[in-house]
Length: 25
Image 1 (tube, helix red, strand yellow):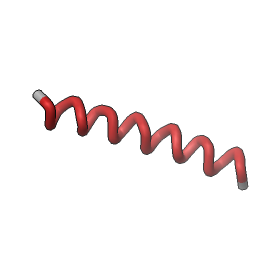
Image 2 (cartoon, rainbow, N blue to C red; image 1 turned 90 degrees about the horizontal axis):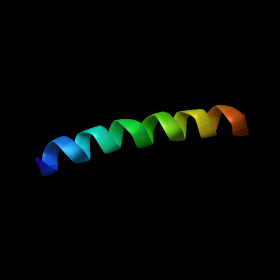
Image 3 (cartoon, rainbow, N blue to C red; image 1 turned 180 degrees about the vertical axis):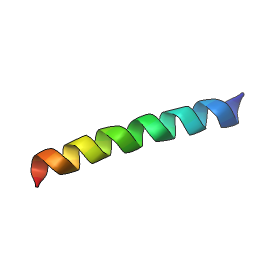
């Protein structure tokens, strides 16, 4: 349960960071 949520959250955060990085660059 915790592992699944963490994994999903990690993917979501990764996408957000990627979008943010693209905007900064």
